[in-house]
Length: 339
Ligand SMILES: Cc1cc2nc3c(=O)[nH]c(=O)nc-3n(C[C@H](O)[C@H](O)[C@H](O)COP(=O)(O)OP(=O)(O)OC[C@H]3O[C@@H](n4cnc5c(N)ncnc54)[C@H](O)[C@@H]3O)c2cc1C
Image (cartoon, rainbow, N blue to C red; front, top):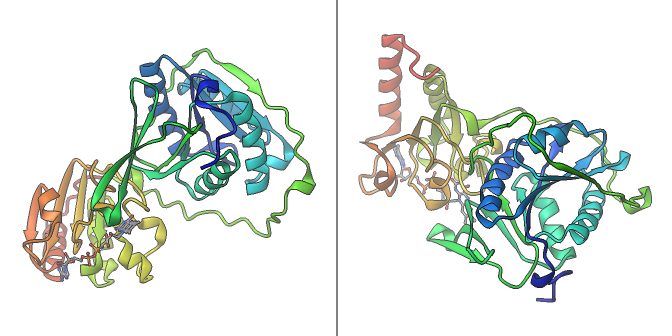
C-alpha cells in the first residue's frame, strides 16, 4: 500500500471524531464516538477533536465541547448544507491534512460509510469498517474489533504504519457522553476554497427516514427466519411490552420487514432491558447486536441452536405456538411490563 499523506512521526497526538449532522442536529452515533474518543484520549494524554461540516451549524460547537471535545474543527459553507460526497470529502481532506490526527472515527451511517471509504483512498490509509469495539494500546495504536470469516472469528485489527487510523463504528456500540455545561474548548475554523464546479452530485429529492430508533427500545422482540415472515405476531407482543420489533438479516433480505429494523453487525446495535429472540439461530453477526441487552430470552424449536448458549432464558418450542400463548397471558394480566 502506498504511503499515507503523512507519516506516523508527523501525526499530531490527537483523536478526531467526525460529527455528522442533519438539519443542525448531531447523529447519536457521533456523540457516542465522542464519549469513547474522550476516554481513549484521556488514556493517552492526547487531545480530542471534533470535525463538523455543514452550513449555519455554529450552535453545534458549544454542544460538542460540552460533550467532551477539546477542539472543534468547523467548516461552515453554503455548499456543505447537504451532504454530497465530493464536497464533504474535499473539505475533510483539507482538515485532516492540516490537523494530522493519529485516529479518525466516523459513525457507520450511510453517509459516514460513504465518506470514510472515499477518504481512506484519498489520504491513502486503511479503514476498519463496521467495528463493534475500539481501544488503544499504550503505544498509541488503535485496536478495532471486527467480526470476520462469516462471523466465526473476532478479529482485532491494528494499523501500525498508516495515518490516520480510521474506523467506522455502529450506532449503539458505545454509551452517549455526559454533557458538562461551561466546559472549555477551542474553535478552529476551516477555510475552504470549495466551489460549485467540484460537486457533480445533484440532489433531486430528499426523503426523511421513518424515525425507527431500535437502539433505544426498552424491549426488543426480534424475529429470524424461523418466524416465517409473520412479524404481526411479534408486533403484538412488542406492543404489549412497550417495545419494538427487530429482525435478523434473512427476513429483511426477503422483504418481510424494513431494513432499518435489522439488528447485528450490519444493522443496529441495541441495548434493551429485554431482548426476545424468536426463530433465530444465533449467528455471531446477529448476536453482536444484542450482546448489550440486560436479559436475553430465546425461543427456538432446535434445542441445539447456538442462541441458547447466549440466552439467559431458553424456550425450546415452535414460535407459532409459544408467542400466541405468551400474548394471551399478557392480555389476560392486562399489564404493560416495560413501558
Ligand atoms: C458480512 C456479514 C454481515 C452480516 N450481518 C448480519 C446482521 O447484521 N444481522 C444478522 O442478523 N445477520 C447478519 N448476517 C447473516 C448472519 O451470518 C446469519 O446468516 C443470520 O443472522 C441468520 O439469521 P437467522 O437466525 O434468522 O436464520 P437461520 O440461521 O436460518 O436460523 C433460523 C432459526 O430458526 C429456527 N426455527 C425454524 N423454525 C422455527 C419455528 N417454527 N419456531 C422456532 N424456531 C424455529 C431454526 O431452528 C434456526 O435456528 C451477516 C452475514 C455476513 C456474511
